[in-house]
Every structure is written in structure tokens, then in C-alpha cells.
Image 1 (cartoon, rainbow, N blue to C red):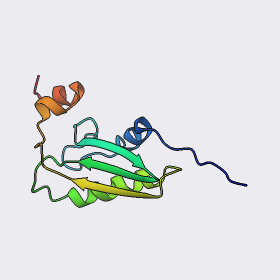
Image 2 (image 1 turned 90 degrees about the vertical axis):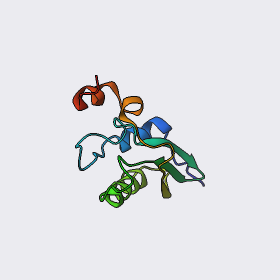
Image 3 (image 1 turned 120 degrees about the horizontal axis):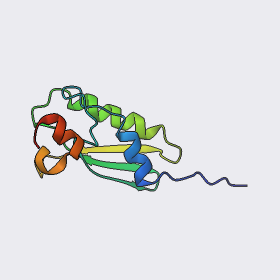
Image 4 (image 1 turned 135 degrees about the vertical axis):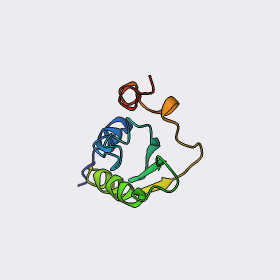
Length: 106
């Protein structure tokens, strides 16, 4: 007898990632536009994301938090977080409207 595990959707994974705040800006990494993609392949969540700056001293903390919030979802056996700076983060084009307002971009 086999039991099928429910596979989380991209939306569910993004909702989990949205619970993580950038430690310096105190805003969701999803709302900031730091998550470029999230996929699930054979039980492994693959996250491609960036940081607000290449020298961000808390990048490891954000990466660890992303690992743990996704690993807790049923159907995810492993998580790989890839940090990239291509393209560079630009809040004017990547952040949500709410974040742009809070940052004074509008």
C-alpha cells in the first residue's frame, strides 16, 4: 500500500517564503522581489533568489530560513537555495507596490 504525499504548489511555497523578512529592511523577501523562482523537482525545492546587496552580511541567515520554511512542507524532501546577483536587485522594478510605497519610491 502506498500513500501519495500532497505536492505543494508554487503559490504555497511562495506563501511560506513570504513569512521571511529581510533582517535589515524588516519586509518580506517575497514582497521585496528577492525570490526569482521556486520550483519543485522530485521532492526537491529549488529556490533562485538574490539579496538586497552582494555584501549583505545576513545572506546566510535568509538562506537558512528559506531552507527551513520549505523543508517543513509535506512533499519536500530537500531544499536547494541558489543566490544570484544576475539580475541585480532593483526595488523600482522588483518590489511590490506596498514595498515601493514604504521605501518612498512612489
